[in-house]
Image 1 (cartoon, one colour):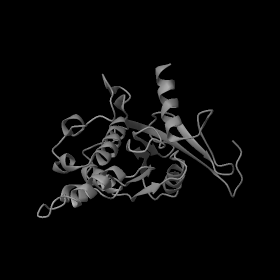
Image 2 (tube, one colour):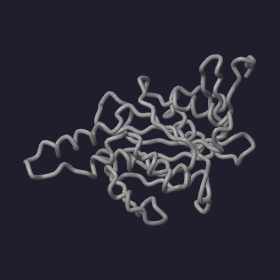
Image 3 (cartoon, one colour):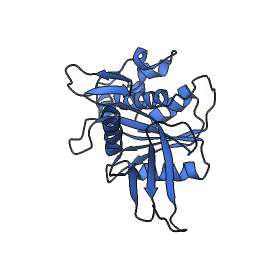
Length: 240
């Protein structure tokens, strides 16, 4: 793929992928399928945590989705839990944000006088809350932020993240998207996250290439139009 000096290509190894959807959750080699999917699953701490983390039980559903998918992706990338500090950044995209939680919290403000609004819900009325929770639990010290997308494909966050990784701003990158099921016009509800590491690192699910001159992403020889496309392409390659 020919690039100009002003528009180099970013090429990075995909070392891990984890997700939570209505039909399944987990990572390749460790997938749990929902028997009768009726909306997004309720995730318990016992399912994803290897040690106690009291904050997980208090999280809203939106935060649990993102936290769980990040945890699955790190497990798939085989990033050592024993390392106390890791310079790994997190970038997450969302269309719905935590609107569902905001609505639930607003309902507690409207209750009868003398009953306080829910402090637990209030703690998660920012969509980026689960990024901090994941960083604390997994010992991630890289920068983290949330992007509210107009085009719901996750690629804006991926482009920013690959630049950060290429410039040495982090040793690895977690990038993905998280959406609740509140908005019928949003992408498929759930969370999907990937772990990206520099060339020369361990192999995983192939490489992602960003042609910055043409603003095109590709996984192998296939053009990728969204993070969902990337996930489906990885699954197709592994199951064929």
